[in-house]
Image (cartoon, rainbow, N blue to C red; front, side, top):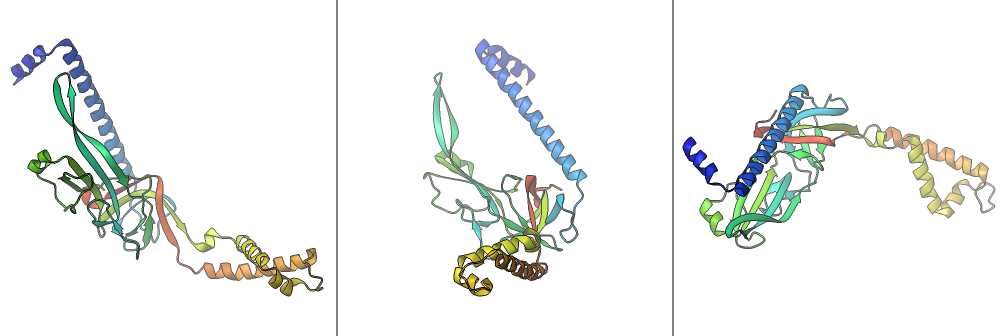
Length: 278
């Protein structure tokens, strides 16, 4: 085998030899880059302890749990029509290229679409809202099938297409999916929010005053104590105090509302547990 490789190298023209050498160098650099990236990811996962939503600190954390769809908001992959939590869809067309009296085939991308719809993560102690936008996602559910129309005319199944069909088809359809109920491993930024933390008493009071201004007659009825048809400074101060008092009552009610855990970027990584990560 070694002699055959030496003979093959000797048969190359200087131009072919240079081209082959460049390809090998680029392949080595790409392999080194992938190794460093995987090594950094492994250390990131190794050094980040798994938290629970019930007691998790705010900021960069690691979570595990089952993925769930938002109620009444199912997501369907555009090519296979499978219900899912997240998808990355790709349509490619096979093209034949003639170069120096040789032909080669390559796949040209015609359509690419990545889901940015939020979904839920249930870790048994709480439920978090996951925003996958700009996240790095590794999915082990991958569909590849083939056809002769630009848009697939049949629904893909959770299996790969045969090599014979691939050779005879002009189009290739690919989808990566995260499915409902799948165990997920997530590293991301956690921020727990509630309506009470999002809106202060002064914010609520300002909105109340803005609403009251929209109905001038009602405003005059409530606060125009001298009945001159105008709200003077003293009367406006009374209106402000009334708005603050009502805002405090509303804010106290908001304190009892359910908190929402948001999991998002910067630089979050969503990795299905069954993909062997974590």
